[in-house]
Image 1: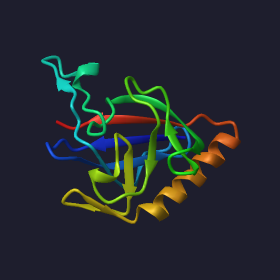
Image 2: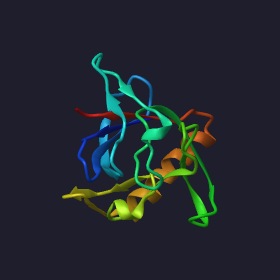
Image 3: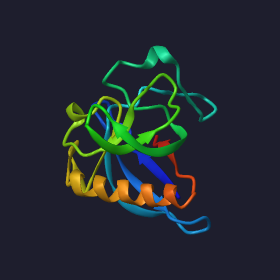
Length: 152
């Protein structure tokens, strides 16, 4: 199972869309809206994004673009099982969860039904569905990954 986060870059926040591919060869289809802290990477002349640890403002920075594995495990912060994004450079404990604004995230991906003007709604239901989907895929032995892509 693969996911793809297409991000729109803004100074105040990073809205986007989460696309899902259940099986290899299937097309990616829209699943839900997303919201993150601002992207602080720098676009280079060659069109690639540059990440350096000094770009990070703790609690106020979206994770660097790129490909990451996902798992579902217990979050001590939320006191329940949640999706975790693994091996993010200079970040730890990055989760997918519901919330309404960037005040509800510290680098995590907020998921929801609709994002308007840097506010997102419906995240509790969507988050529960995503946890079930990712858990089932992992239990079947499939790998689950996500690619975060910055817009321009």
